[in-house]
Image 1 (tube, rainbow, N blue to C red):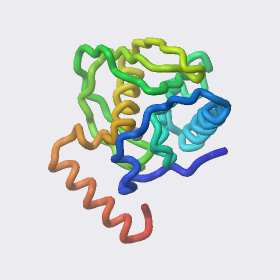
Image 2 (image 1 turned 180 degrees about the vertical axis):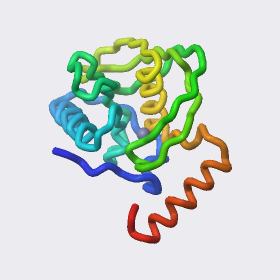
Image 3 (image 1 turned 45 degrees about the vertical axis):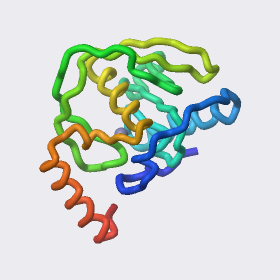
Length: 169
Ligand SMILES: [Zn+2]
C-alpha cells in the first residue's frame, strides 16, 4: 500500500527512531510498502519516520527503477566511514517544493542489516553517499535543514508556516 508522506512539522520527523529487532513477514511487507510509497512520491530515498513509522528503516533507489539491482534496504544503519566534502542541491519528500545546497561527505560507507537481519557494508559515492547521510539523519530525527544556515532555515520555516495557515501544507 502507498502511505502518505509525513510533512515537516510532524514531531515523528524529529524523533529518534527505534531499532528493528524482528525480521519477519510484517517487516518485509513494510519494506515493499516503503518502496511503493517512495516511487509514488517520486523519491530516491525514504525513511520509515516519513510514513509515520518511528523505526530505523530506510529504502533507497538512486536509479529510480532503472536498475533493480541498485535497490537498497538499510535496517539499523550506521555510517562507519566517510571522506571528502561536496556541496549539492538537496531536497526531502517531507519538505516538498524546497531545495538547498548541503555539504556532505563525498564517499560514505554504511553498515546495516538487510530484510533477513544479516549485516552488510556498502560504500557509496556522490548521490548514494548523500542518500546514506540523509536517510540515516532521518532515523536520528534530523532533517537536512539542520545542515543549512540559521538564516536560510528560518526563512524556510516562515514560508512553511504561511503554507500551513493557508491550508496548503
Ligand atoms: Zn528526507
